[in-house]
Image (cartoon, rainbow, N blue to C red; front, top):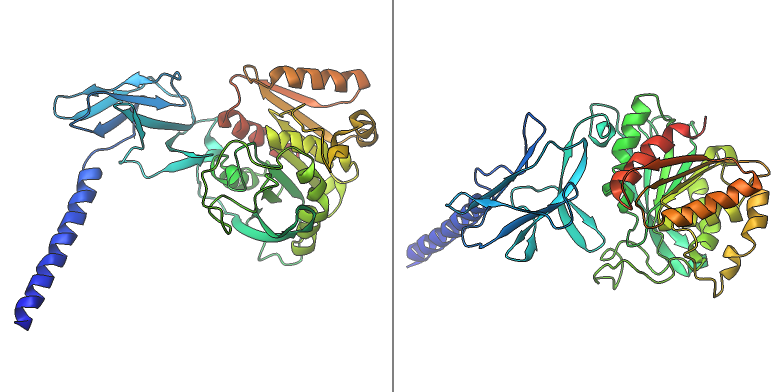
Length: 389
C-alpha cells in the first residue's frame, strides 16, 4: 500500500511538472517577439487563436495603434517601419483588453501601468545599453526625514565604479528628481540613469559622481508596496507633492544625510540639482531657496507655476524674484530643456522671459516631442557632461 501511494504521489508531481513545462512552452514556445530585423524594422508576434482583434500600441506609433494580422492559425503579427534609436515601449490590445507580451520579459512600470520595452541601438540611445565598462552601484537607502515627520524614507543612490575601493576620494553629487506619479525608482528604471552614468563616465565625458534620486512625494515613504500599509494602486497625484514640503525638507533632511553618510565634496561648486516635470519644479524652488547650495541646476520640462500657494510651506514659493536675484548674484550653470509640443511649453516660455528680463544667463535646449521619457533621457545625456567642470 505504501509503495502504491508513493507511486501515485510521484505520478502527480510528474504531471504537475509537465503541466508547468507545458505552460511555459505555451506562453513562450518558439515565438520571438519583438524581433529587431536587420533593416531596422521590428516584428511583433502574439499567439492568440481565440482573439477576434489584436492591436499593437507603442511609443513609436500614433495613440490609436495599429491592427495586427492573423496568419490563419492564431499567430498575430505586425512589422513596423524602420525605428529610430531609442528605448521603445509597447503593449498588445486583445479584444479591447491591454496585455503584456508573454514572449518579452523586459517590462517597465510607469505610475500604475506596465509596458514591455526594447532598445534600438544607435547614436541617440548608445548610452542606454549596458556596455562592457566599469559599473557603478545602485542602492536603496533609508534615511530619516524629521521635516516631513517620518522616521525613515527611501531614496535611490548611485555611486560610481571604484567608490568602494578608493576610500579616501570624495565625489560631487547630483540630486536627480522625478515627476508626478513617479518615485525613487523612476530615474533608475525608466530613465536608464545608471547606464547613462556608467557609459558617460567610462567615456570620460562626465565626472565620476554620486547621484541621489529621492522620492518627491511628501506623502510617501517609498515606492507604493515597499513601506508599511502601502499596498495601494499608484496614481498620478499624491499628497504633499507641490505644497513646499519637499523643498523645505530637501537640504536639512536629504542633503545633510548624504553629506554625513557618503564621501561628498560638500560645497556649491560640487553640488547639482535637476529634475523632470514636477522634479524640475522642485529643482527650481530648492535651488532658489538655497542659493549657496547648488552650483548647477537642470529643469527638464519643468512644471512651472503649478504650486499650491497655501499651507505651512507657502513661503517656499513667495518672493521668487528676490530669491532668483540672490541665486544669480553668483550665477549657477542653469539648464532649461523642453519639447516643442509639451503641454508645459508656454509656462517655460514665460519663465525664460522672466529670466531674460532680469538678465540672467542660462542654457536653453528645445527638442521635438512632448512630455515624455525619450526627451528626459536625452536631457540627462546632455546635462551630465556639463557638471562639475
